[in-house]
Each structure stands twice: as structure tokens, then as C-alpha cells.
Amino acid sequence: MKSRTKKIIGWSVVALIVVALVVGIILTDGMYTSSEDISDVMQDAVLHEENQVSIFGYNVNPGLVSAFVVTIILLAAAALIRIFAIPRFRLVPGKFQLAVESIVGWFDKLAKTNSPHRNSFLGAYIFGAGCYIFAGTLFELIGAAVVSTAGNSVALPAPLSDINGAIAMGFLSYFVILSGGIVSNGMRGVGRTLKDFSLPISMSFRLFGALLSGLLVTELVYYYIALSFVLPVIVGVLFTLLHALIQTYVLVMLTSLFYGEVSESHVKVPKEKKKKAKAVKVKQ
Image (cartoon, rainbow, N blue to C red; front, side):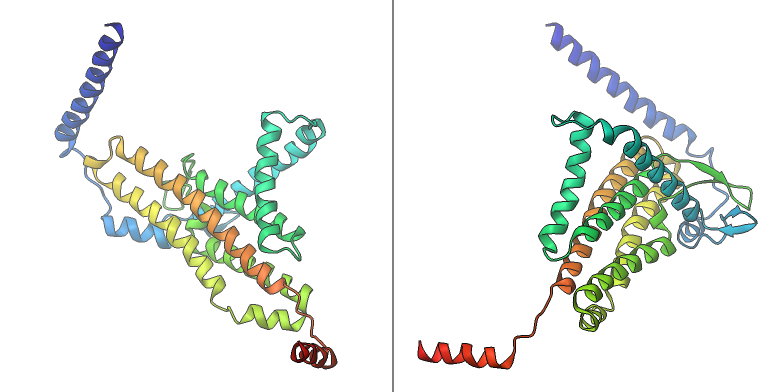
């Protein structure tokens, strides 16, 4: 009986909250007006022509500020883990050690699986890139605000929702792939990498499009008062978490696959050995 009574009370509270939200939406719908058209809001979310931020006298996109903040946070976290945590690692790992080793081991295994020939640098790069994409995407959930040059309060977005940040990440990954081809196969590796000239463009716009779509949907939900109760929390968190996981996995997987393909060594077989091999096959 007690458990049934608790369930009834719980569902009653939920129903009261929903009714209160509906009544609030109905009563306040005509009280709020936006000074900006929805098309202008969406356009500025992409181009950042109005809501820019001043840094050292230069007007930049808010995404650049986010990139600096995320980079500083990741470097500080890496330094603290290296100085204070890693020296205390034991043969029998604790929870934090197990979490760190599991994450590093997953990226290392991914690099070795897709690039068995050269994978030491690849593992380090995809680990760094994956952490940056994941942490940078989740950064927008913090909702840190800065004052734009126009005097408006602007929430800092994910660094890769800025087209410049997405292009930088795409081309950096492409240059890492190119370096693997050069080290392993010289000019032949360059040719094999350059034939996929559309790869950095596809990587860049895949990141930009995925993260921007979440930003635009959230902006759209916040714009209308009828949708701005509870729903933005669900939509914002859901889109952000999905994009953080999916885009991290997609970029590191593509990078490791193409790196492994171009870094695979191809040794020319001498003509004499080829003739002997053919002769052996004929005899057989």
C-alpha cells in the first residue's frame, strides 16, 4: 500500500508540474516578443557577423574563444593527471586509473587495428583529436556567456560549430594522413594521399554540419516561448551528447583507416623473383 501511495503521489506531482507549465505557456505567450527575426538569429548562428567578441582589439567569432578555453582546460587536465595521478598508478587499478587506461587503450587498439605498420603517432593523434572534439562539443552545455561587440550576451558555442574550426580540424587530420604516407612510402605515399583530395573537405563539413544542426535546433527551440519550457534542456543535452560521441568516433575512425591505407609499405618484387615464382607455379 505504501509503495502504491508513493506512486500515486509521484504521478500527481508530475501531472501538476505539466499543468503548471501549460498554463504558464498560455498566459505568457503574448507577453514576450523578440526584437530579432528568426531568420536573422539562424543566419548569425552560422556566419557570426553581428555577435562577435573582441580579443586584444580584434573582433573574432565566439567559436575561437571556445577553442582557446577548451584547449587550456584539456592541457591543464593533462598536466594535472601526468603530475599527480599517473605516478600513483598501481598494478591493481582503481576506478580513475581504470577509466584512463580504458580510454587510452581504446584509441591505441583502434590505431593498431587500422594501421598495423605505423601506429605510435597515430594513436597519440587520434586520442588528442578525439578528446578535443568530445570535450569541445560538451563545452556548449556549460553555457558560458561573453559580451559581444554589439553589447549582447552571447553563449559560447562548440568550437567546431564554427566553420573555421571544423576546416582546421579536417585539414590537420589530412596532413597527419599525408605524413604517414610520406614516412612509409615517400613520394608514392604523397600520390596515394593526394588522390583523396576531397577528404579534408568532407571531414570539415561533416563536423561543421553535424554540430551546427544541433546549434540551430536549439536556437529555434529557444526562440519560441511556447517551446522554451523544459524542451530546450532535453533537446540540447540529447543533441550535444549524440554529436559528441558520433563525431568523435567518425573522425578518429576515418583518420586511422586512411592513415593505415597510405602508410602500408609496398615493396617492389624484383623481376627475377617474379619469373621464378611463375616457373614454380607452371611446374606445379
